Length: 218
Image (cartoon, rainbow, N blue to C red; front, side, top):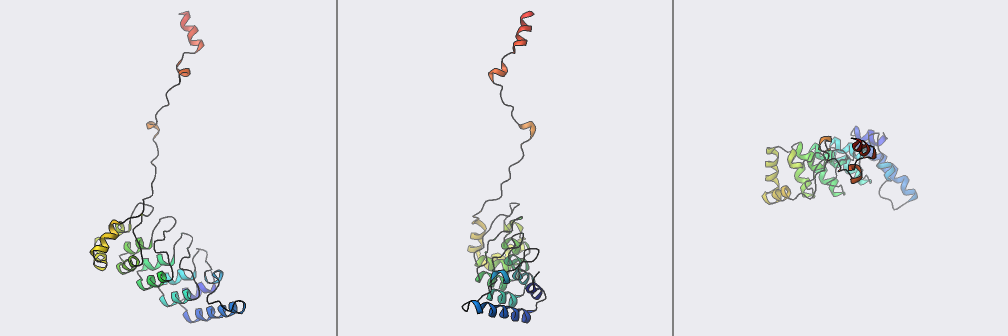
């Protein structure tokens, strides 16, 4: 874990800003035109593959999120399970944070690697209607997770009713019906007793020489 992770985890905005500004001044000595930091520094990952931006989004700290993005943190960086900062923002229901991440190029329909959860899955499953509304405004669509569930499948009736109010009937219906994705297909195992036996060839069906001799003796 880097010093950036610690500053962000403790919501220490002032110290974080001083460190980022100092690092940028050092970089500008070699490249005077630089306005952002090298990704190896600002996007350094902890043992879970999370960057400082992941932690800021998890904490719901908009000011620190903006600060990190200003200095070049990538909103598309993924942790070990392909979770992005946008997933955390959606899960926590932070619509303003979602707006900022998307403004900087976050992948609004990104899926996690194992469960295939999108930010919209997380927002609706947690009943975060404002967050879901913001995601849809930024281009979120319904996609299947690894269990074949769409975001609407994980939402309560109350959540969907509220989302309908926020989006309006036309946009809500479009989101509900326009599914440009296919569920994960799993081939069922073939039961042993259902396997068809291969028909015997003519050679296998013909009596053997020993059987023919025995039949002749009788």
